[in-house]
Image (cartoon, rainbow, N blue to C red; front, top):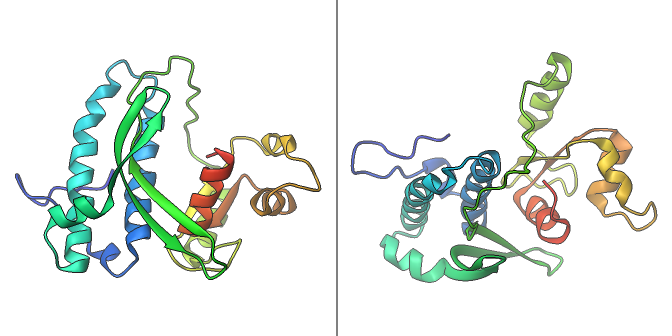
Length: 204
């Protein structure tokens, strides 16, 4: 978990993100927070993550404020919105970015109901050494394996390669075809490609 509190009562500005786009800043915080919620979704006290959301929200808004040299409340007003969920409306923050192709990608932080899921499957443990080293090397290269972008590089993964079989061979998305061709459960992608995968296909 990133340390977001420099000192008691202060919120950390993540300087490494300031030179990136608003979309990438929101996407980074959003993917990190979503990961924590998914990991702890079996916990009976998952509502405690509200405190984590609050701290991450302050850090995100402070980082955006430092980027634009404006007060955090201006960034809040610019990016705050609501989203419909199975448990009603939830407050969140969004930032859009238009790709050269004209496609608009939207990154989101928050908007996730903190409800316990007793039937969630937790997958934990270390990767085998050889494959783990290979993944680190691919991630260190910092190039999206779908579009060759270098912006907001992260890892998309599936639990099993057989999970890809639910996609039709001829109409499968590019990311599915890429993972099938490489026979890998991981794919190095940029922030835009990762957001597109989650938005249209709902996988992790």
